[in-house]
Length: 458
Image (cartoon, rainbow, N blue to C red; front, side, top):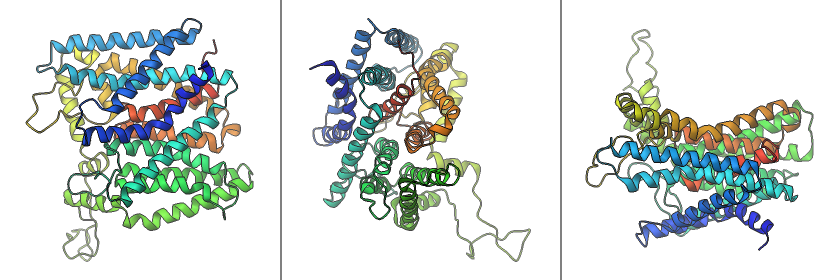
């Protein structure tokens, strides 16, 4: 195998992600394995990324800096383990190592992909076109799995109790929801680039397939992801036509198609699981949003009228964060009372946990940036977040400076995919701490910074 093929396969690994996730679900549910097929394959891919970086460090200054960074990251983890073994009681080493493996996955894969894309670009391989195609194929597989699972009645439930929703043949509903939200803008981009007639919107079928799965999940992330992507295309097309005078057939066609799909989404919303789930959540919080009901409390300032339903700050946060805000408050309280060593280098996996009750697991906040901060402390968190923040800020500055030439579907939708990924990481988690999800975010950011020449070329 020549080096170019190896590099292409490295990127094409994106296509296999949904297949790996289905096999992972089978490993857990049918074979009851502790170490799943997906864990092994993804660990090997991360290891290969590390080996490739070390190999390229012989002739690439950039690769050498990346290797030094990863050595520093390994040192921080060793310090974290050594400190917390003497502070935390109990200390579950396997759980801690499993968490660290998930966290470093993004960093190793992202830095590896930067070098891979750099090498492919030097070989005149179209990194944007092929990355779009691979993510599009991944999206088609995900959409097909959801449809087949639902038609055959074999779909897994996404909620255990009072909410509705299904996750196809994917085991982790939160993770597949985040994946679909990141993939959807790229699926839309693939359709946009091939649509120049609103009467022939066939290329949007994969977008509809993925969207149906996202609606079926019954999550706010799924519904919100569809809405954000459609509005991005709709508003972006409008700006191109009105302010940039780009009245091409492609822009007009996609303006009409995105408007029609947005309207369709509004019409089907009352019949989606997420709509019912929101009302179930409101009932759980004892919130009544109906007006004109005799049970409503009379407003003292308007005795002839009725007091509008009110939502407290705490209830609103619970609606948005689904109880994550409570875990966050607990972690903040614990962090304020820990030794200075833990403030600097973190409390490790799930903070200073206690022995869990039988049948219960140790809980994290499930808001990635907060989890990383409390797990790695001030020093560890800043070190961890540096590559993501550095390249993201560098790209945003580059985009703003060149907005006249860069305001196009490619940059809009890749930007939306990245923003959805980081936004979900901040609010709902399961992105930067989930290898199945973080690989998509890593590939998108790596492709953009290489495509725009935002890295050292040496």
